Amino acid sequence: MDSPLALLALVSHFAFVLAGLLIYAVGTHARDQRRHPSAALAWVLTIALLPYVGLPLYLLLGTRKFARPSHILQRTMPAPRPHEDGLQACAIATLDGMGLAPPATSRQVRFHADGQAAWDGLAILINSARVQLDISTFVLGNDALGQRVARLLSERAAAGVRVRLLLDSVGSWRTSVMLVRQLRAAGVQVHWFMPLLHNPLRGRVNLRNHRKLAIADGRRLWSGGRNLAAEYFNGEHQQKPWIDLSFTLAGALAAQAQDLFDSHWRYSRGPRVADDNKTQKPPTPAAQEPPEQATPGYPDQTLTQMVPSGPDQAEDTFYGLLLTLLFRAERRVLAVTPYFVPDDSLLTALCLAARRGVQVELVVPARSNHRLADIARARALRDLVAAGGQVRLAPGMVHAKAVVVDDGVALTGSLNIDSRSLFLNFELMVAFYGSEDIEAVTQWIDGNFHDLPLHQPAPPSLLRDIAEGLVRWLGFQI
Image: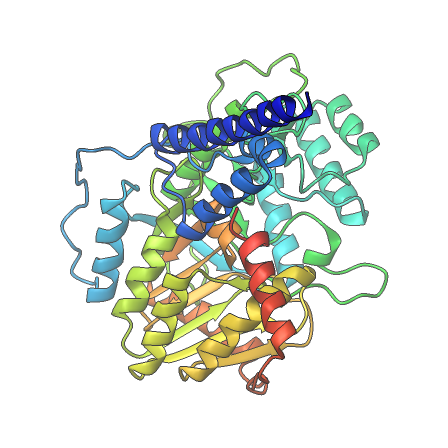
């Protein structure tokens, strides 16, 4: 009697495994997910070896993309401008080939040297809104700065401005419920992006909105790496603030950021307030106040390009751009990131650049706020140093995300150089092509980190090497 039952159980188990693998294969192909090979292998092994855990996890977390690539390439890139060098033209062509909007002129670009400058820029932008104010953040701190932000938003709502606040449901899980209630009572519309429960987008709860945006009237933009919490600005309880980089600008990129925010707002789900379904738009340029006056020492106009990355993009846009720039680099590559867990292709590109004589410099915190990321990065740091790259470990927490290549392109925004940011999160970077902007980002990096000693990694023990590989494979690929 036991033998037939055992045989039936075994057959049923293998049938479940095969069904799970078939669901994975069909879902991946039908949705054109194009996973990284190590991520695909991790899913296959998980479903095959732990099917009763792996299949539900795949159904819950398995979607990576919901924008599909066009099979007909329609190039929209304008003719190269006279001041564009070869690297810039290559970057613009690469982004055009992936369907992104062409470069646009931005005005009044300001990079924030520290947290106080970042707060001043944010407060000025919020107070400048006359019709509409939209803010998206991964973290809204349950602290004094979160309260300051809430007060500013409530004041704008009281002044008749339509204020919308979009919070990532995972990143802001510690945000005070009372604070959210106060905001809603003041007339601020608050939505949660992809909540873990009652998510309208099934299978996508693993896709987090890591973009940081504040947009006033569709024409002024505050963005970068900073979340709206005390540690990103002036610190709290006598703790030093994290080193981060953000910026403000005005012009066409603000309108593009508005479109991104509107798309996220449609994805979100939350209590509907009275005017949530209004189609009110920011005022047209003709109805706006006169443009800002130029500030001495800053260029009046500069060339910029928005680089959104994530599930709403058919291609891995920033990843493709970064690979292109690294293979074209000739003199210097500067990179700052809090977490450094590149895939094999990106690490190879960095190492090859260093081996052919490019000065590759990487800055990461000596110890970040994510211990697993520090373990997973060790092998990549050893490989980069062995190839001739320079690695500097900052003593405090560095949360900035910036890359400068050959004094031709500067990139900054929300994206970390790790697999989650590169392949899963909604992220936003901006490419700066103006020489003054590139110099400003370069000087900010050199001024903060150039005097740090070079990191000389020690060879790992066998157990340490195995642990690093497991953390890298399991923790940062699925």
